[in-house]
Figure 1 (cartoon, rainbow over the protein chains, first blue to last red):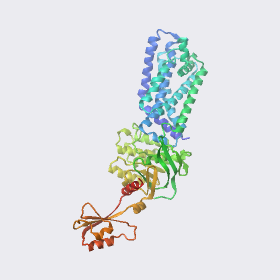
Figure 2: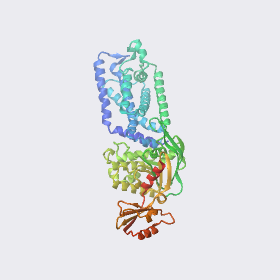
Figure 3: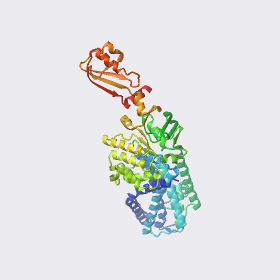
Figure 4: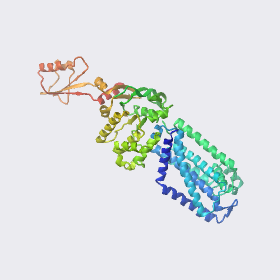
Length: 253
Length: 311
C-alpha cells in the first residue's frame, strides 16, 4: 500500500477545505438556523408532534441527512473534477498509486468534511430543540455509511462530468429534490396511500428513515432494509469506480 | 553519456486512438542509463503519446514498456516510482503554495516527508524565496520551475521533460539547460521532447526522430551530425561573376546571397573533399577571392531533411 500517497491526497483535500473553513462552517450553521426558523417556528407551531416527537426535533435527522448528501457529493466531485479541469490529473495518473488508494484519499477526505458538517448541524440543532439519540452507535454508523457512500457517488460524478454544468446538475436537479421528497421534513405515513407507495421508489427515504430511527426509534421502513439499501448503493458505487479505473474512463486516453 | 544499460525498453508499442487514428506504429526504443535523450518530431508525430504511455497517463494498444526491468502496467508501482514527468502545459493546482504542492508530489509518489529534500530542490530551482507564494501569482517561467520541482520531489531516476522550455525567455531557457545538465551529472536519465532543435543540439547525447508514429532514426548526436550533416565552403569573390565558368561545373557550385559569393558542398568523410583541386581550378580560371569560411549544417536542417525524406 502507498500510504504516503493516500495521506498526501487526504491532507491536500483537507487543506483545500481548510482554506475556506470559516465559510464551510458558517454556511451550514446559518442554513440550519434558517430551517429551524422556517420549519420549526412557522410550520412547527401548526404541527406539534410527529410520531410522538416534537416537529422541531423530528426534522433534525432529515436536516443532517440533507446536508450530508449534498456536502458529500459536492466535496468528492469537486475534489476529482478540479484537477481534471486544471489538467493536474496527470500527476495522479503517473503516480505509483492504485485506484483503491486514490479513492481512499479523495473519498476519505470528502466523507470527513461532510461528517464534520453533519456533527456541526447536530450541535447547532441542539441550540434550538432537545435532540435525543436513542442508538448513538447506529447513528454514527449511518452517518459514516451515508457519508462514504455519497462521497463515492460524488467521486463518480466528478469523473463523469466534463463541464461545470454537469457537475452541478445531479446534486441540484436530482439529489436535493429526492432528499426533500424523501421525508426530511415529514413522515411518509402523513402522505396519501398512493404517494406513500410512490415514495418508496425514492432511495433517500431509506437513508433518512434509518437515520431517524437511530435518534427516535421511529422509522418509515424497516431499519434492516435501510441499512441494506445504503450498503447496496455503496457496493454499486465501488463497482463503478473499479470499472472506471480499470478502463480509464474519462481519465486515460 | 550512457553507462550501457537501458533504463527504459520500449518494445513494439502501438497506440490506436478512438476513430482508428494510429498514433504509434510498432515503436521500439531503448533509453540508456545516465544519458540525455532528445526525441524530436513535428506536431502530431507521437512524441507526447509515447511519453504519456511510458508514464502511465495513456493506455497502450499493444506492446510493452519496461522501466529498469519492471513492466509499467504489471509492476506499475516499481516502474512509476522511478519516473518524474514535467508536462508540456503549465498544469497544476493554481491555488496551492509552491512548497505544499511540491511536498504533495513527494507524498503521492510514496516517499516519506523530507523537508530537507524539498528545500534542496526548491533552492536548486531558485524557488526557495517563493516557497510560500500561491502558484497563481507566479510568472510562466516560475510555474515551469514549479513543475520541475514537483517532478523531482520524489527523487526520480528518470526524468521526462515534455517541451521544457516552450514559451520561456532566453535567459530562463539557459537556466533550464543548466538544470538538466546538473541532473544528468547527478545520475538522472533525462528524456526530453522539444521543438527547439537548438536545445537538442546543445544538450542531447542521443537523438531520436519520430514522425507519423514511427521512430525513423535513433543516433548519437555527434555521429548523426557527422554523418547526415553536410559542410559548405563559402568563398567571397573579389569580383562578381555573371555565370559559373564551364571549367568549374563539375564542382556543382552555387551562388550565395549575390554573384560575388560561391558555395561549395563537400563531404568530410569522402576520401577527397575536392577543396584543394577547386581552389586550384579557381586560380586557373582567374577567379580571386578575399575571404573563406566553412559552415556545418545544423541539427534542424538534418531533422527537416529526415522528415521530408520520409514524407
